[in-house]
Image 1 (tube, rainbow, N blue to C red):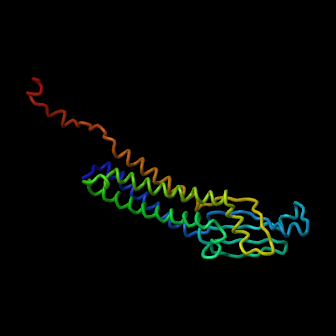
Image 2: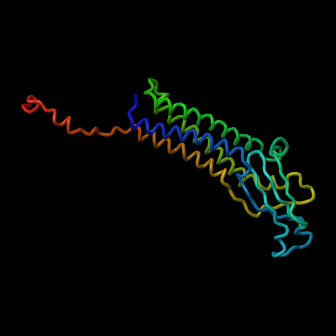
Length: 232
């Protein structure tokens, strides 16, 4: 049986792994990975709008991995609309990268659950196989955190290098062209970053669990000294 100290660390780590699984699942299903402000360039150019008048042509956009929405401002008031990434819009984006981001997060969720299960196992007993012990725990957490990091990096690359927000804003806009003025990563994106950090914390807990602290002798043990011990 593992000691009380190890049990506490592994119980804490199992909670973190399960929380990571929940966080990724929630983040994937939300629409607030990215928000931004967009300018209706066509409308502004038509009326030759000056700086104070540009406010009438500035809208908003928000989206996640599967759906989002936007407010179009083209001089005639705001028009709200919602959209889904699949199955049509994704063809206009970097399809491979977008699908890989989703796959990386799904794989990370799987490894988070595996990590959770093995932490519970190590809390109950000492496994006889290394892959089920601390070595395996390190592997599962490295894989989970690594896949989350890949997904986060891929999403950042899609936004910054492949102009993801601009492509979404201009999807099926035949009469107007929109320019992105401002982009901001939102809470759901940062939840994934926090999830990757949580697995790094688990690695730290595993390392701490392997430290052998010196045993402190009690007064009772010190008092049990025989005459033979004194002679020697």
